Length: 225
Image (cartoon, rainbow, N blue to C red; front, side, top):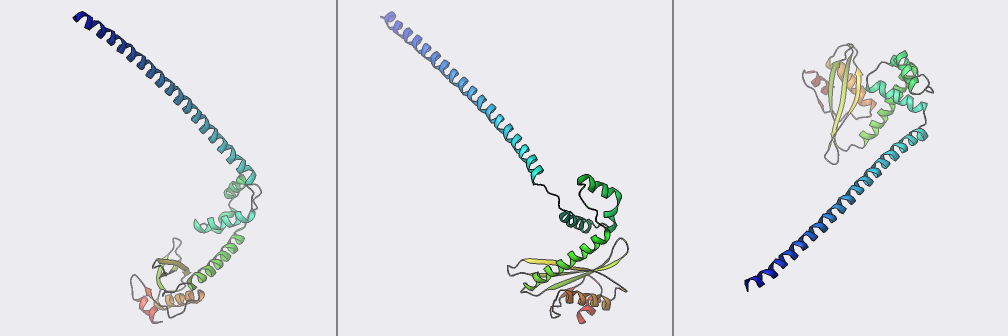
């Protein structure tokens, strides 16, 4: 009786073991196929990325060759901005090393003299004055002013004049009105005259006289005038 019961049990165990091996083989085959597919996808994605980068580079080169047109006017404006923002002397545009650099970038660029640069800067300043006038006309609040007298590296005295206000959205705004060359002493009377000339240039009414100064009593003289 015991022998008859064990035989079917051994046969079942053998079947289960065979079935388990079959499932493991199928699972291993499935994993292998998945890995091969992922590998193929990665290779395809890599090829697509490489192709996209190549196309992008080609497009940039094509755009650079076909869309670029040299403009003497744009070069002239860029030169003026460079002179102003980097605080260069007007004569810098005539230095041989600078001209050589410009010629290497574009031989079509025409040399611009220091006199032309000076005129362009004065025109640019006048244009900015008009833009600031229009901006200040839109201010509905009162204007405040700060004055700061200082001396440049080449020992030239200037008076910086800045105005401040709060706009309709309760946001702080400020703009630099002028760097005025100071002739004579840094007296309250002299500073007040410069300040009044600046107000006149920007069409700012004299009723808006709110001035602050860091130290000294010259500001009180300015207020009185």
